[in-house]
Image (cartoon, rainbow, N blue to C red):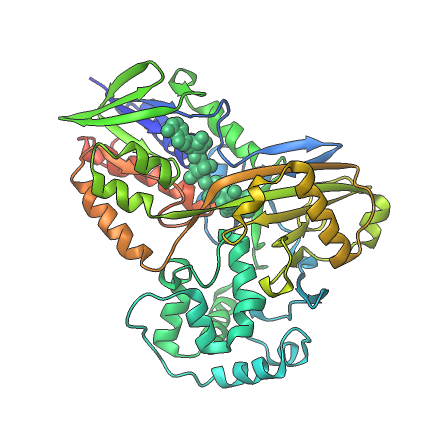
Length: 472
Ligand SMILES: Cc1cc2nc3c(=O)[nH]c(=O)nc-3n(C[C@H](O)[C@H](O)[C@H](O)COP(=O)(O)OP(=O)(O)OC[C@H]3O[C@@H](n4cnc5c(N)ncnc54)[C@H](O)[C@@H]3O)c2cc1C
């Protein structure tokens, strides 16, 4: 008899789990599955629209190349020839400083300076911070007694200006969160490790860079990878591979009940019995679903905070394209007092995004410190974005089109103590056999980590319900 598995959540995490199960099923493993998704469409925050010949990403626009799991999945799905890299030859990022764009100096590796001259001559940092950077070179090895925030670690090495100018804007780009809230051990474990072993982050980064350069053959891979037709292409390819009979869209799961030898899943007016359960929903929804099964587990999950994000894409004509600055876009430090967190010049960042006679500017708003903006109407949000674009890059032209996408509670925030929380969650999960959790709440928020989490959840679950790893 086949084992039956329910997957709750049809974002990239749940779809990856469903694809993995489908592969096993086709290979003869006795397993069936049902994928429940509350919305009418699958893909979660991965949505690509086509507007006026341009490709508009509503959510993620790419994945970091260094983490291989999303690109590997694309290759497996037959999309290898559709993978595209970011236009790194024109990579240039600006930081808004006193209302003006200042280019990030060459040699900065995720806020750690590794080249002396570009940093010394950069107008981005004050002399005080430059002195701190020089002194940082002699920072003694240090192991923090407990987890701490990213801001605490960065400030210890480079001072508060570095937190405001770089740590905060970079983290708000990835997590929609603040350096003063996010856990260094969960978000930047490499930094904690480098500090412990080398003391100076600058020296550690430089030595890692030299090792990489020595080992490297051929040109460096692009920093970001995407798909010619956008992130939706990945969703479509996954959906095409999954058994259509297994898909239940517009079906929100209301409750799950743990029973001896399995789980009952109730959605709409129906309930169904399964041998195993993968929950790939945001932690708040997972917490709610598991309240009856284990209140401690539900509480731990419920304490994982989320922030919201809004993307606003504005399409312009050729004349604007000619006048926009070169490079990928800009980040806005908190001290600038704007609502905009960052903006991407999409037509520069990737090929195949806009025809030559169009410019695409994608702005990010919201994040942990501006949840209120979600209450604003689409028009108000566009007005804010346009007013700030005018102030920052003097962009006053009327856009040809505008698209606004709101993503409430979409970005998990790994607060201080996140890793310890994950351990407690794992221990509590062990008491609920036949349950696996996936999604962006745990060990990585980006698309590659979500893909990995969905596929790993399948491996864990199958061995728990008596189908050993590697069967078929
Ligand atoms: C604006 C934005 C930009 C981003 N940019 C990038 C980027 O460039 N690169 C990158 O790598 N990552 C990026 N991310 C992060 C990444 O896209 C997400 O972390 C990831 O896609 C989350 O996937 P998921 O499947 O875990 O969750 P989701 O996509 O949130 O999917 C969860 C699904 O579960 C469903 N669900 C919830 N409760 C239930 C229920 N009770 N019953 C049935 N279904 C339910 C929801 O409807 C949803 O579809 C970005 C995120 C956002 C919001």
